Image 1 (cartoon, rainbow, N blue to C red):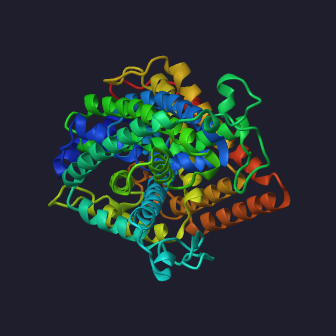
Image 2 (cartoon, helix red, strand yellow):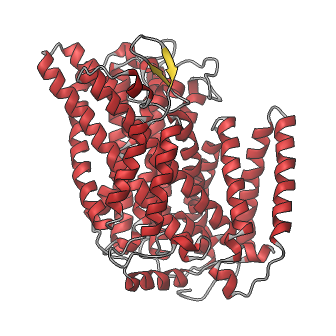
Image 3 (cartoon, one colour):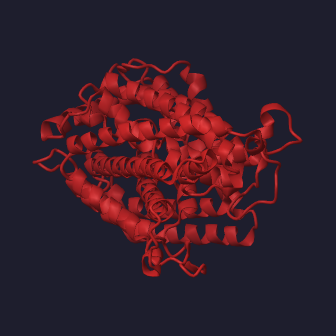
Length: 569
């Protein structure tokens, strides 16, 4: 049983599959510029137009600048690991493929399932932020008085909307957030080239918008807004004094809040992961994909730090929300005293640029999600998604499955819940990729590596440990939701996926009755639920058990694969 769960695909296996995918029609149409734009298309999306406001208001205050810098440093470590793995293990599955080659099929499934959460809910999150900016543009900038029926259709049932009478009410359905994924799915079914061209144009526009915002706001930054704790000295003054935990936050503000914010803003960096999912469509993947990953991280970290500094320097951090740049540009116009016409034009430009930027974010997440499902389909774990469209050379079935599901979720779910869940999925993928590098250096030391990460024995464990530490800072309810998602994934794998796995079939694996698997999962879930119910800190114990199991599995993979594989295997 255990041997079946840790069956591994060799790097040579992945290279042959990549060559076969190219012959089957997966078109190599993306150059270095398009790959960087692909990464920035997602990174410079919700991560800069929405997440800074939520993380600053709920956790870090002006210390959000430190959170972004810390997240960028960890992403650089993870990015170096990704850059090595892209050349060693070519494929569309990103962290899923890398884990398959180093830890085995079941851990790879867990990562692939987490990536579905990361990309699927990432598209939902950006769509919800897009809806918020659209509402701000129509009401606050253009002065349109939306009827109550439309206001109720601009927020999901878990969000609160202010009616024309001033009364607060629960939304019905976030219609704009629902329509956006459907429209972009129609673009993506035409193939990666059409999506990349649209994305490149949008990225250039939003970089201009960000430059305008920073240039206009930098002169209005005040010490009163940046100094969140007057009793502190030096750079620590940007970190608010710790307070009673707010709703959904394990910590209030303070140093713990800054650490929590690092985990929350981590989802802002899933753009470089999106670069690796497109490796089968890159013209020169061994050169361009690593360069695209590292360039995306460097540019995005600089942009995040600048925008966070200006934003919290011109707006009191407690006033920030899910449309921080909209709030920021309105503050800039008001403080500079510009005429109504100038203010209207500038606000419309910035908010319109934010809408365009968020649009490309949804585009890239949908594209990445489809390619993750395509990789799972190629391996037989979800075989329906392993087909390519002969006309476009893209994974049409996977794309058509992702768009409608994202549209429904975007109509219902609120932004804060989404941001924390997406961050957990991202951090888990980063941790396992960092762990995979030293494992494969040990087990396959002579395999071809076009890019070699420096000091893998230090870099890999450091990146994995830091990612796991940041996962531990996530709020308890978020961990319970993530655990429920993982349980659903385990059920799919044991009851269906492993029974259709091509690698299991090639190894002649035999399986018992699926009812025994279902019974075992039900008993285990009941026991875990009882522990979580009986202990106030039950979620924390589950989290530690999960991370301990992950560490033990990594150690087991090292021990059982101690003998180096032959060259090129």
